Image (cartoon, rainbow, N blue to C red; front, side):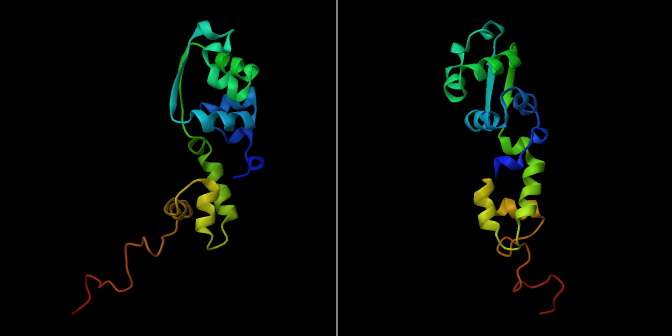
Length: 141
């Protein structure tokens, strides 16, 4: 997925507000490092980023303070960015699909091949429920 294809409007909670405070690149970087984590931001931490050294090291002290101020007094769960931008990713997958590049799309977007089939609404021949050599329930023997 190319960063230029994602805009501020593509983000859902909790990233939708964060992206306006620290930018798209920093939001994606933050999400990649803190996905699946729940973080408690205490009000006392507002003026000092030393309570969140991981964020300061990753994004710089200025961005860390903005994040702490934004979420002060809250406990926030940060899901994978894919879940936040799910609709945009689906559109990008459909746009980049050429009829047979399932493996390539899976690698590019971080999904399994089976998930790409599901997103595109197609059935993989190897994952298909019906096999061409399988007898039909109503076939006569």
